Amino acid sequence: MRTIVPGLCTAMVLMARGADAQMPLPAARPPDGATLFKQQCAVCHTTNLSDPMRQGPPLVRIVGRTAGKVEGFHYSDGLAKADFTWDEARLDAWLANPQAVIPGVIMAYRQARPETRAAIITYLKELN
Image (cartoon, rainbow, N blue to C red; front, side, top):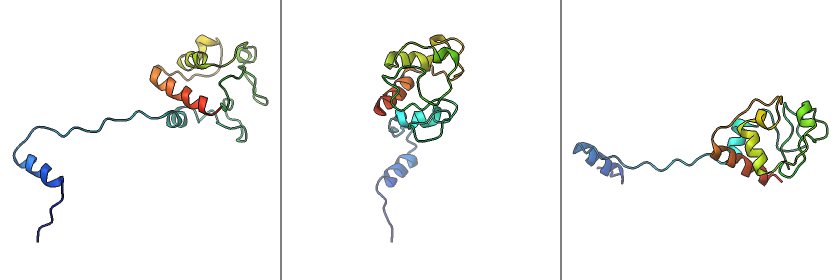
């Protein structure tokens, strides 16, 4: 008795014929903002105020928050004296190069890919 597996038979026939045409692979989906945050930001930052502080301040409700003003977190001098509110444009510049936004800050992370920065910022906006 032979069992026929749909799809497998087609692939076997193509291979037997020496077909060099390849089946198209599904398009890879880029990671979403939550995944990127976990991979690239969560080592230093939390997304809530109940977890213990890490190397960086919690980022929940960062969009619209005054820079350098989370109670209980010790900021570098530059951030402590910052006089701006975090918005999408400022976060994008910050993630691209924190030193260019506020010289002398401790954060060393830089993200060159605009689409990655945008996904992370979109995720942070969802936390507001």
